[in-house]
Image 1 (cartoon, rainbow, N blue to C red):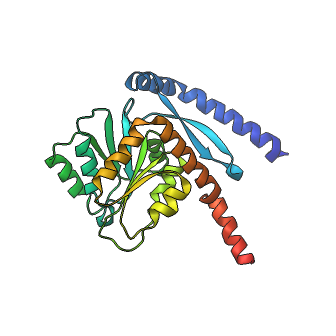
Image 2: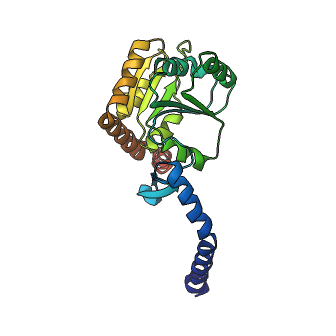
Image 3: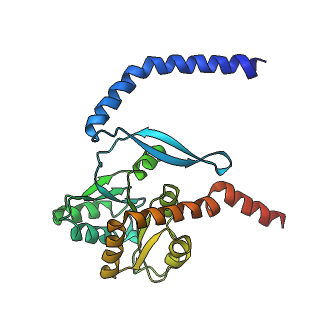
Length: 249
């Protein structure tokens, strides 16, 4: 009886008291973010919940990217990530003040990437370090496309896991991959989550970026396709079921 009634009643009362206590801070933060983000202090984010049922949560906006087209790269910045691709994109679109490249992560090549951006006089790149998962997912919700970049010199097939994060947030993917990788056909073409080009093919890379930038409908379609592929194939619940079936068989 305590667990089913009194504990729930006590939890509700304590939660209500806590909410009332911090409500002035909540209201103040909302007002400040209202003016800082052009009248939109919140954003909505989809999350898979129990039994893979999708629910929507409301969160505060933290980064002032309102009205910008955000191309996000998140993860390790190492030799295998061909950081030059991101600089090439940023240089090509430096005169478009609406486009921002957001780089989140650390790695052996990050300082080189920052220096390359500084030497090129690029002001359209924002660098951030690794952050807690919830905060990174909040940031993902502001992105218009997710970037994948692999060094064209690598011959070993590679499959960056960051695409799962992009898919889970309905973010279409723009990938620049090495010739030895089946990543484009296996992940991107099969899921319909984005566009890809082989490393060094700048014309195709720019053309793919232009297609995603100019068509909100295409971004929405590919984001939805990637999300559905994620729900049906890549969630922990689905992988668990597959492993269990293999063990049982």
